[in-house]
Structure formats: structure tokens, C-alpha cells
Amino acid sequence: MNALSVIDDLKRRFPNEPEYIQAVEEVLTSIEDVYNENPEFERYNLIERLCIPDRIFAFRVSWVDDKGKVHNNMGYRVQHNNAIGPYKGGIRFHSSVNLSILKFLAFEQTFKNSLTTLAMGGAKGGSDFSPRGKSDMEVMRFCQAFIQELWRQIGPDTDVPAGDIGVGGREVGYMFGEYKKMAREFTGTFTGKGYEFGGSLIRPEATGYGNVYFLLEMLKTRGLSIEGKRVAISGSGNVATYTAEKLLSLGAKVVSMSDSDGSIYVPDGLSQEQLDYIFKLKNIYRGRIREFAEEYECQYFEGERPWQHVACDIAMPSATQNEIDGDDARALIANGCIAVSEGANMPSTPDAIREFQKARILYAPGKAANAGGVSVSGLEMAQNSQKLSWSAEEVDRKLQDIMTEIHKQCVKYGTEEDGYINYVRGANVAGFMKVARAMMAQGVL
Ligand SMILES: NC(=O)C1=CN([C@@H]2O[C@H](COP(=O)(O)OP(=O)(O)OC[C@H]3O[C@@H](n4cnc5c(N)ncnc54)[C@H](OP(=O)(O)O)[C@@H]3O)[C@@H](O)[C@H]2O)C=CC1
Ligand SMILES: O=C(O)CCC(=O)C(=O)O
Image: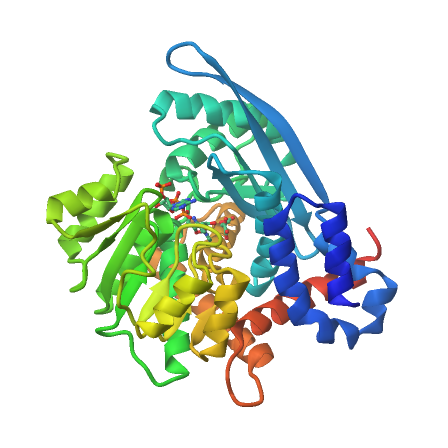
């Protein structure tokens, strides 16, 4: 395989999909040598079959708002690869959603899920519908219309969706309800469900907590502890808030959070009371982070991400893709940042990643660091199959074990001659090899 020529070919065939090409390029350039050590992969044209999704569903979603006006959004599900288990991955509702974004997310999910040690293939879905500013009833009607189109393509052993940007417990509940009605079955077809109907304890916390567990493993490799470290977080949604909660409980200082309108800066770190305010602001009032700045009179950067404005030891981007560019990375490093652990999917541009690696700081890509969410989704599937629920302690212990194991795999496949751990290479090679072996064993499909 020549990574560059495969990428050129994909660019030619999918010319308007920059995020998808970006994700593929990152993986292919880091697995090229390992791939070429296995000539049978090339004979089976494994790389092309692994890069191009198994199938994509695209559909119109028509729904009626509270004033009786009819709206039409697009809905998608990208089933990328099911070599090691049923398709699995979140659903994103955001105005920016398009096929390029969902294809990159489904591609990444395939490698991430492989790293988790659990049996899950990769998928992602979503819509350009934005829940922002919509009433509960409008969100419910949209979720029902979305599932009326999608329900035939998913199932507990086929494809198991969950949340992502714009999709939390409320949306999963509405989608699960509609699925249950259409399919006439009560199964674990969604994860991230409410506890009363089969959800796992710790699933809401899992991505954020898991990212902190991964960060602790990275810090250990340099003999460092988290206590007293200043951590800049972006976003103020599911991943960001639970990352902050775990960090506070471990004695770290959370100096920033953000939303798509701007960022707050709290140099001495958020108190527990302030974090509780953000939880309420975002989950109950569905307000803006600017309101926090007004309430607590802290610095607020309108329309800005945190990276250029804050002094921090650690950055945990937890909002969206390509939210740290080369300039942001250079600013972070200049301001003393020694570690970046990604809660979001692909938040750092290729230029930013090069800067982090050149500076030899600890840098963990999302597919390793944020794998805790889908891992606990896998544990939710296991509980649903057994018709049992495990205690929060048990799930949290399993989550910690999985994050430690993912870190071990990154060290195994990513340690370079000078001892620097290239977590990008480690995660990509480890994730790839498991999927590749399964695909080889199953023949050309
Ligand atoms: N939920 C999960 O279990 C997992 C999520 N992830 C990834 O983590 C990231 C965050 O997801 P999650 O917390 O679930 O989503 P939420 O919808 O709960 O929160 C998203 C946060 O990011 C902000 N945000 C979203 N899009 C943009 C944008 N284009 N520019 C600036 N800010 C933006 C939102 O601000 P606003 O409210 O203003 O839009 C919000 O604060 C995503 O990359 C997701 O793919 C990864 C693994 C698992
Ligand atoms: O829990 C899941 O199935 C998916 C979580 C997710 O969307 C992700 O890992 O990016």
C-alpha cells in the first residue's frame, strides 16, 4: 500500500469530504509500514475495504414545529465496518452535520471501538437538525420522525446507536421509545438510555471520566500527578462537564469551559458550586456559557475558543472537530501546556498534532482518550443482553481497566526509539490490526 496514492484516489472519488479525508490520512500514514509487513492485506485490497463504509443510509426527515410549520431535515446513518461486532456509534444532531463529518466519525469509531477490547464495529449517524432553541415537543417529534426512517436498519445485534453532539438522554429516550413501538421489541438497541429502561450507571459520565483516567496513565509515564494542574477544557456539554467533575474530585483546577458562542476563563479554577451552576445552566435551562461569566464576573471571550487566552498545564478539547489549529497549539505550548488529551473526536488539526509531537508533549488522540463513552455503551449492551444491571462501582472499575488497557496498547505500538510515546501511531496500529485480522478471517465481503 502506498498511503499517499490511496488518499489521492479517495480524494478523487469523494472530492467534497475534507473531514473524512483528514481522518483517513491520519490513520493511513501511521499504519502504512505495518500494513506492508503483511502482503496478504494488499492481495485482499483490505485498505480500500476498510476506508470506504460498508453502507450509508440517507433520508429526509419531515416534522412539524409548535406553530404548525413543516420542516425537512436530512438524516443519515453510516455503517462503516462490522468485522469485530455489531455497528456501534453515536448520533449527532447539529446544523453542521453532513456526510463528510459522519463518514470521518464512523471511520474513527471503527478503530476506537477496536481499542476498547469489546466486540463492537463502527458507525455514526445524525442530522442537520439542531435541538438548540427547540421545545421539548419539537425535539420529540423530530426524534420520532428520524427513527421512523431508520428503525429497520438498526437492532441490538445489527447496529446500536447512542448520543453525540446534540443528542443526550432526552433524545435517546425519544428515539428508543419510537424504535420500541415500530419494531415491537424491547431490546438494547440504543445505549445511553435512562436507568429506568435499561441504561447503564456511569454511561453519562463515562467519556469525561474515561478521558481523565487515560490522562492519569499518560502523566504516570512522566512521573507526574494531576493534583494542582491547571486544565483548560472546551465545550460545556456531556463530555466537558463530566471531565471537569472528575478533575475537581482529583484536585485539579479547571480554568476554562466554552460553548459555540464563547469561552470563560477562571484562572484559580472552578469551584464545585460553579461547576454545579454550569450543569444546571446547560442541562436544565439550556442556557449559554456567557451567563456564567455574568453570574460570577469572570473573563469571557465572545466568539473565541479558550486556547489562545488561557495559561494551562493540560488541554482537554471536548467540543468538536478541528477546534485546535496550529496557532492554537503553538500558543498552548508557549503558555506551558505539557499534555493534551482529546475528549472530542479529531479536535486537533494535522498542523496542531505536528506541533504537539514536535514539542514532545503528551498528546492523546480522541480515538484512545475518549473511548470510555463507547466502552460503557458496550457494557450497557452486555447488561441488556444479560437482563441485569451492574452497580456504579462495578461499571466504573471496568471503565478504569479498559482505559488502562487502551493506554497499554498505545505504549506497545507507539513507543519510538527515543522513548517518546506516539499515541497517534499506537492507537491507530493497535486499532487497525484487530479489525484487519477479523476482516481477513471473514473473506472478501
Ligand atoms: N457523548 C459521548 O459519549 C461522546 C462524545 N464524543 C465527542 O465529544 C465532543 C462533545 O460531545 P458531547 O459533549 O457529547 O456533545 P454536547 O452536545 O453535550 O456538547 C457539545 C459542546 O460542544 C460545543 N460545540 C459543539 N459544536 C461546536 C462548534 N462547532 N463550535 C464550538 N463549540 C461547539 C457545544 O456548544 P453549543 O451548546 O453552543 O453548541 C457544547 O458545549 C464531540 O466531538 C463528540 O463527538 C466522543 C466520545 C463519546
Ligand atoms: O456510545 C456510543 O455508542 C458512541 C459514543 C460516540 O459517539 C463516540 O465514541 O464518539
